[in-house]
Length: 193
Image (cartoon, rainbow, N blue to C red; front, side, top):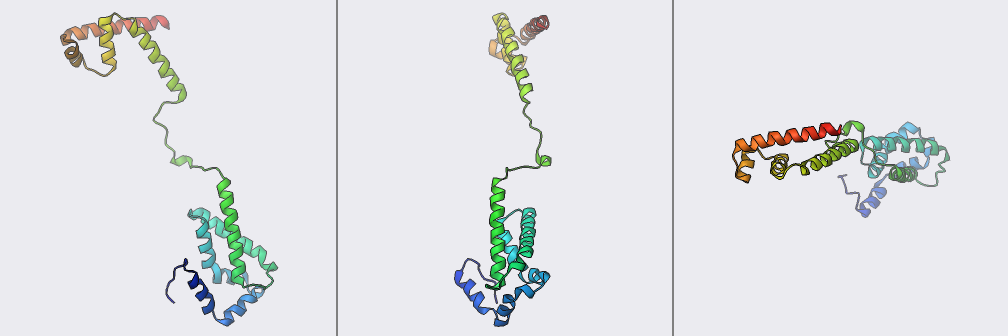
């Protein structure tokens, strides 16, 4: 028999009709069949049902083991009023539904080994940086206007040569004024400590 699509309901009916009568009779006497043989004969069915409820391979194996345990516990109560295959599928589907409900209520977790430290500063570091920036800007606002321009442009990443082009001054004048502005800022910060 060729491999068939599970989604076709008529195929499922055909599969049941193609099963030999002696197999049907054997399934009806399931209480007499050892558990190991039931697992051997119906293992692929149980695995497919577990796969339909869980994508993660490790959790799928846990679900499959849970299904097997539930079947082992339920076998003594099998009354032979249905096919063994039906009985097993019902137990497997019930366990699958319970598994999905349990997984949905679980909070999502990530293993710590997969987490990388954040490149962003911690909240405490961020607060410290923000405080220092506020103090720096307060001190920059107290500088004379000519020096203030130089410091602001330097803080924005401009080189002395670029600042000289912006302010139409020589790079030498810019370097001298920057040195004086830095000294004034240092003394302002040391007097605050």
